[in-house]
Length: 244
Length: 244
Image (cartoon, rainbow over all chains, first blue to last red; front, side):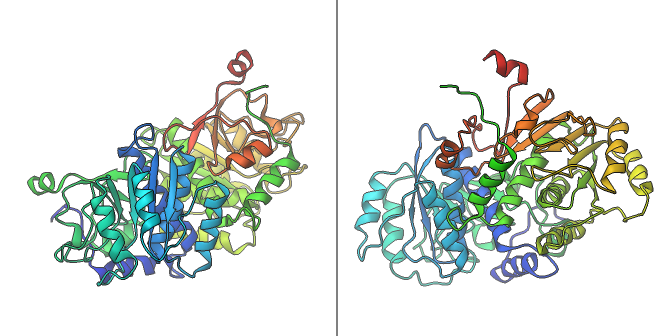
């Protein structure tokens, strides 16, 4: 029996999420987003220390991953970073508004929505690292405006990128085949890595320490052991894993 | 200006909680309980490692602190401990039911409610450490049944005790004056310590890393800096603090 970690298809990733939030799983979106966003912030802090990388541009998409980004921005603020939020298409769910208010209460600025990308360009020039929480496992191509113009700007900024779950622009199962996606330095997979990131070569972390043993077995996840009480665990590099 | 940490009266502790959950603060109970319970579990893990103290008896009261206890039990299960829950008077809020289901899904047992304390006695004989999440800052004496019979049992068990926020049986402002409270080895204060624990002499941690700078100033909390991305910080011993 293989002991290597399981990778989720888009469909299975969806099923894991649904099961966690079903009546049987009993988790609320508030709970899962809080733990996911905390894991994202802790991953960034593990790799990019705040004395060298204080200014974090947190890029949030229109779906649940944008919510993870808002939670991460708040925790990064608590850790002493200076986050700035770019969220040009906030989702309509009530939770995003609450998460945004929590950030506003911490004086975390949100970039003004502008028809062009000028405010994003300007923010990139004043940032040290990017947290990419734009698209997650429910992303379907093509990349739509304004994100189609934003992804190349993020890529060309030369800033280090930490991507959440699936690098933005990648197909959840086929990866960056189309070549329009970001190439992050660090990836934080949530609950379990997705098929599309099998070939990812940067530093790869896992977060979302709320999957029960029963679910792990049901979905064949073979998750690694998290150390102590940590909410994140670093996975072996892809080439190392192949040798194991 | 004194730089020592601020202690909260019962009234101020209530105000801090209300402000966090007000429309202005925008936090949901789900979010705050998740972060508080995680901090409790991480504190226990910091002091009592699972190889020596695998069996944790999580004692939950009828209020919000019981909810923190349920969240902590789940995280302890995730950390590889074997928690058992004693919650003889579950609160009626819907959130407690969801948190209990999450524990049940992880095969964390809950002791049967019994008119006497026999199941609690038996569980104590098979536990290595106690997490005391019975009463918090909204406790008002006297200690009512079945907790009046339980507190002496916990105290006499000789097991190490980690108390949440205020050791159970203590007055929130006057401490253990009445002498009916537990004498824990470890205390985890949430958001800020309460007046009654000024004289506490064990290992003292702080959790609840979600208080904004503005609230910290408003309530004169002078919170210590949490290290890195940690969700808990150990406070100096009371006698050390007096020398500072």
